[in-house]
Image 1: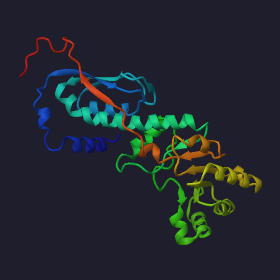
Image 2 (image 1 turned 90 degrees about the horizontal axis):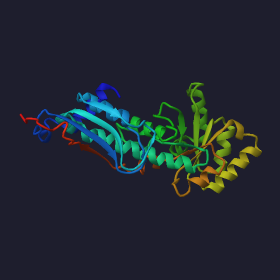
Image 3 (image 1 turned 45 degrees about the vertical axis):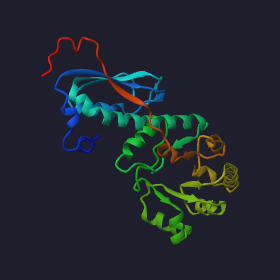
Image 4 (image 1 turned 30 degrees about the vertical axis):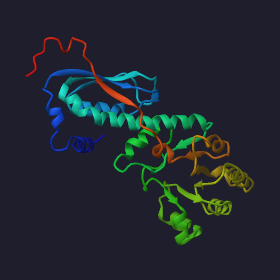
Length: 282
């Protein structure tokens, strides 16, 4: 991450003065981070950056995106005891949040039957890059990072201008390199979008059976091959298999970032005698 971004996170976590860590003298110490539950680990690179900022040595024992069994040590950190305590929570927050997203993403990918699983822009302000990276590390697609990534015509756009006018303006204003996606709530709008030059059609809050009927209709009209079809809205672990079998190319879920639970990780200071024996506390 950018140095300025890292320092913003650190400043937010430390505040003006860290009284608790100031109680600890500058003694050498060693600690380990343990994943207390099985997960797809991610955020290791970010945690290492945080530890390095505090002058600590950090050894990663797994790669980001790798499956980690419960009670595994995922990294070792050594150096100033005060530095370890000051960086502990921020590093764990990155690991817990990102690993939770990666783990849920991997579960969805395995259930989707080969259909691409994508995130949405339902992300935490200021933390989007890391949440999107966690989706990628879990085997998912990041979708567009921001409004500049593609033109997405949604229901509110259509309400204001009408679908055909939205598409006309999108084609007129956008670069040839930028895709135009239309969110549809009916098969009638699906056909209009397909005929009027949309590159991607998103079926919004449609049942899998209705989407499958839409796919067949596009095939009958000779429009299917040039389109990317996406299903979104109301998709969960319980029904993602059905959406995967509906004939779409992409399934996007706000749940990847909205519903992912934090993975339980902890940092434990080791006391093995080698580090602590005979030390004098200043």
